Image (tube, rainbow, N blue to C red; front, side):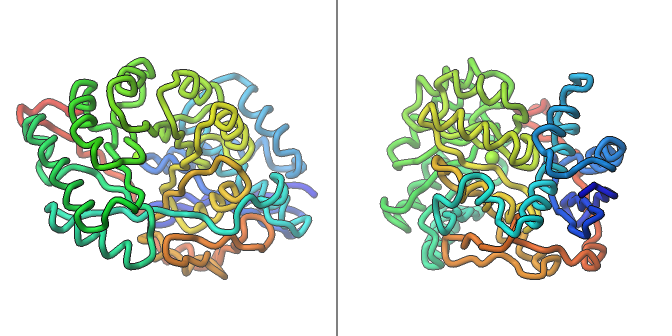
Length: 371
Ligand SMILES: [Mg+2]
């Protein structure tokens, strides 16, 4: 079997890639550098010159050839390689009639726990949003502990808001529902320590990305001064970088993005590094139902899977699939179909025009850029 053609598709806010073979099998993958999909689109077209004509089953070999040809690295290149890698695993699974999770060693679980995002412009609205999610069957919730206008408030007002939000959520759902906070890299080291200590009594399972991702030393400082487990890694894209993050001892959970950090070929290794350090894998996801399907295969196959990000808003794109994934309350059922378990209706892709990201910036009261 040989790769005949590779075609990227910009769809809604996503970048899907289709890899066509001379055996008639078509694999599908997705790229995760969501703010710069057009750059990744061009990278996929560029890399196609290598992949076309190759045997699609030599997946590890292709990753080595492309990543080590000139040793240039970066998120654009890695997102492109990740999307193609996912498609190659899809082809491999479809060529032998088995789901990708079987090729990775078999299922460790039958369904995937996903969390619900808790939103709302006031603490009361957060409580209502949390109660609604629990009523729908979710047992795991995540919230951003900020209220509108946080960027222009004093640091201590932001902490007060966070306490009010988490109190409202716990008042609404009690203490037996898993709850984590997502900071989206919005705090300084000082603010992260102060906020973390104030909100820790609300029994939080994770403190996600308190800081900008560049300094593992700063993350280690926050971990040493806050009594909430840290989750980090969604902007990282290489196996050695994940080893660095794990080796800091600062994180309890890592957040590799399958469609950025090297597809199944690299993320299975990242998961193994984490497993050896007793660290859970909490994959980051921003994408279409194609991407979610691929993640479900990974989550099913790794013993140290912790929790999966999913976006019900992406379900609006379910029409691009012949048979979408099945959600049951706070779970996604692991399908037993070959490859990544979904087939794309290619003719539907053009019905969702591309919506790119616009850089608008984030500013403090004094006009300077926030973290
Ligand atoms: Mg995040």
